[in-house]
Each structure stands twice: as structure tokens, then as C-alpha cells.
Length: 152
View (cartoon, rainbow, N blue to C red):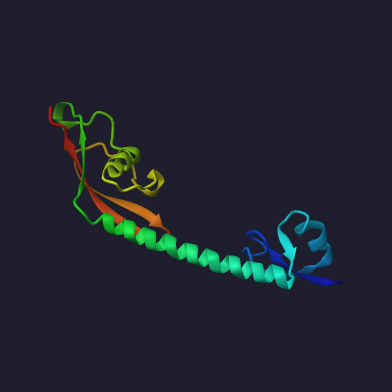
């Protein structure tokens, strides 16, 4: 049985991560991994190319992390206020959702995806709330949100 060294071109839960070098049987490599573009033969040129890509990806990840940390510092400013229409007994018409919060943040110049805002459920009462924001797997922030009655 002949073993070949291959480099994975994509993440695979059973085999490993992209860029990993594996020794597999020649049949598995030639009949499955290589034709399905899951791996390439581990030649010196391919290995060098993957090293360059890893370095580039590491640089890119550092830039994204720095950007997320900078964005997290913006949330330490004044609390965000959202004015809502209320009925009798200060009951809200509808609710404050992540989309409302995203739009209000955008007016302040802070751009986040609404999927990064984590509300257990939509806000249905006036008051002060803390809203968690997950900007990056390593960066989380909290900001204060005040839901206030719209002045007539």
C-alpha cells in the first residue's frame, strides 16, 4: 500500500483544517480527495503557497480583530436612546427589535450587523437596557439603551 502526502484545500471535520498535511492511501487521494478538490499533492510549491496564504490570513485576522476592538470602544459613549410611540399606561405599540437598534446605531455612525446584536426577545417596555454585541469571536461589548416615550 502506497501512501501519499496531500495538503487539504478546505476544512473537513474528519480529516482536519485547510492547509494540514496528511498521509493517506494513494487510492483515497487519487480517487476521492484530489478529484473532489478537497486536497492537492504535497509538493514543495504547493506547501510554499499554503504558507504564504496562512501568513496572509493571519495578517487579515489581526486586522479584523483590531477593527472589532476599535468598534467596541465606540459603545462606551453615551447611552443610545430610542423614542417609541406608547399608548395607555405607557404600553409600547409594537416592540424595539435588533433592526430598530441597528438603524439607530447607523445614524450615530456605528455600523453593525443586526445579527451581532443579541436580544433575548424584543423590548416591549420603556426603560433602560444593556444590549450585548458580539463583534468578533474574541470581542464582545455592552452598550446602554434607553427606550423612552416619544414626545407628542
